[in-house]
Amino acid sequence: MTDLNTLESDVLAQVARAADLQALDAVRVAAVGKTGSISGLLKTLGAMSPEERKTQGAAINALRDKVADAIAAKKAWLEAAELDARLASETLDLSLPAPHRRKGSVHPTMQTMDEMIAIFAEMGFAVAEGPDIEDDFHNFTALNFPEKHPAREMHDTFFFNTKENGERMLLRTHTSPVQVRTMVSQKPPIRIIAPGRTYRVDNDATHTPVFHQVEGLVIDKGIHMGHLKWTLETFLARFFETDAVTTQFRPHHFPFTEPSAEMDVQCDRSGGEIKIGQGTSWLEILGCGMVHPNVLRACGIDPDEYQGFAFGMGVDRLGMLKYGMPDLRDMWSSDVRWLSHYGFSAFAAPNAASGLS
Ligand code: PHE
Image (cartoon, rainbow, N blue to C red; front, side, top):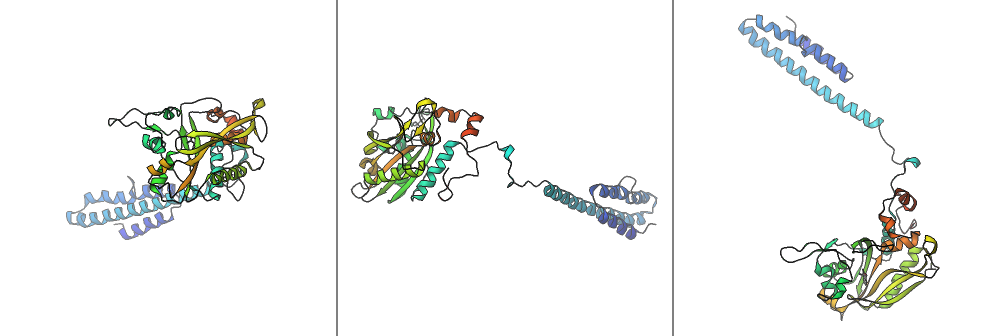
């Protein structure tokens, strides 16, 4: 009769020695495979007396289970070691330069937006956000657009289907609803910008149905037009990285500001290019004004105590001017040649310290 203890220590020693999965499997077949040593022992049970079978059977089965457990544990260990080795050998060094693989780039609109945020952050503005799908109250009513007033038509709004309760949601036509959301949730003093996507039914060289704005809002005691003008001029000089930007303020009308103005930047649009600081064209880049007392009141702020200014800048327009892109529609064309020409490296994130562009 084979000594079970000897067999056990033999097999377990082989399991321990198996250096890879293949060797381990050979040990398994030799011990518990069809013609293996332990399987062979089980076959001898038939010839035993019932008492002997009882004790030997239990002992052989226990041995088989023990060996099977040891093999399973070793297998798991070998597999983990194999995976570790593979991970170690397939490590990618992401810091290595890969000049021939440079495929993706940061879209100029996003680069422009990041630059604007960096400048305003430096000037002490916090970033606020609001939803793209707005209701009538935030996009129009709280901003002093009278019911049924043609000013609402001015915005060429994309509306959703009317809901059962009669409400009709819309794609925000400007970032100004974030002014309202900020003023109802925050006490003055307020100094925020609200960058985001905006939507209007419009499409030509200087208009696309989706465009981007950066809204600005400052509410405090004693705020006046001088603060507005200084803020815009300081921003533009930083943004264009030159003091040679010529701008003009044109009187305008917005229901939510009084007085209101639009600001244009002087540029040259001849020869399929766009350049700033020269030429005979003016490109409108923003709307602005002093926050209308009705808007302050609608947001629970006393206009006798607090005043403020607001502006809404066209991000895509500012990007066009800074980076010389003559047609806004190209920004949506997904033309790889255009993107690789005007796109920015993902590693060149703008910040005030290392430079903007
Ligand atoms: N919301 C206006 C627009 O989209 C811009 C604006 C913002 C004007 C804030 C005044 C104050 O045209």
